[in-house]
Amino acid sequence: MTKQEFLKCIANKTGKPISQIDEILSAMIECITKTVAKNDKLTLPGLGTFSMKKRAARKGRNPQTGATIKIAAKKVPYFSAGAVFKKAVNK
Image (cartoon, rainbow, N blue to C red; front, side):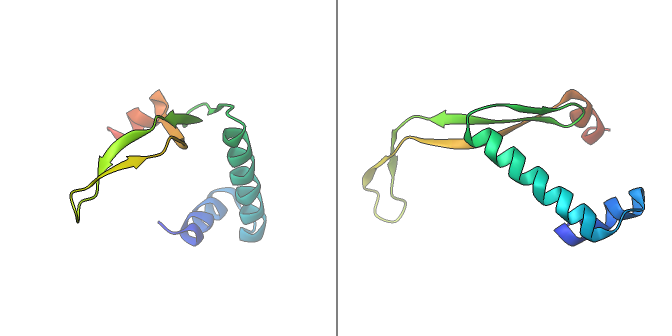
């Protein structure tokens, strides 16, 4: 599903204009991004939890040359699906 299809789906369910829904969705994404970037968790009941995980530095292998390389530590966004969402997907 594309973003436009997603916006149309929400517009059909709410009766709100697509432009207003797009503005709300953009604000929602911005808030989630800022919250996770501060290493805080954001839980949306019925959907799941957005958070950040830290990956330790490790050694990897270049698939083309086979040479060992060092992969730096980094922070990655993480989403954990809630029970209601998992149940809906597994119906």
